[in-house]
Amino acid sequence: MTNQSKNWHAWLNTMPPGPHELHVAGDVLVGNPGIKAVVTMKEPQGINPAILLLDLHLVQEPGMWPQVLTWVPAKYNRVMPPNSKNIEAVEIYEKGEKIASIDHVSIIS
Image (cartoon, rainbow, N blue to C red; front, top):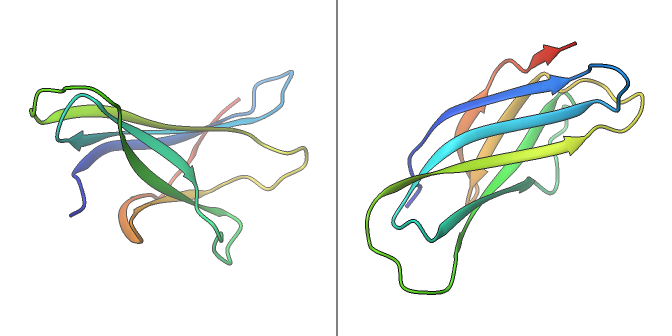
């Protein structure tokens, strides 16, 4: 079962002196506060280099946790290689299913 998610947004920080940094953030509804949301780059990436594909992984921390639905932050940060093309859109997947799509990556300069 795919968890609910909301508030996904992405921005590229191009402010000097550099390097450029890409940030993606959202919120994921999980079954207890001991579950952490980890976002990684999907392998393999798609054929369009302007669309970044990410995977959402939910990791249960050890210990006893109250079974209560909780919104947890999910974040992805990446320093962009020099002279790389800007990311224009982001797609987030969980267990192979697309759960969110960001059609516009804001540029902060």
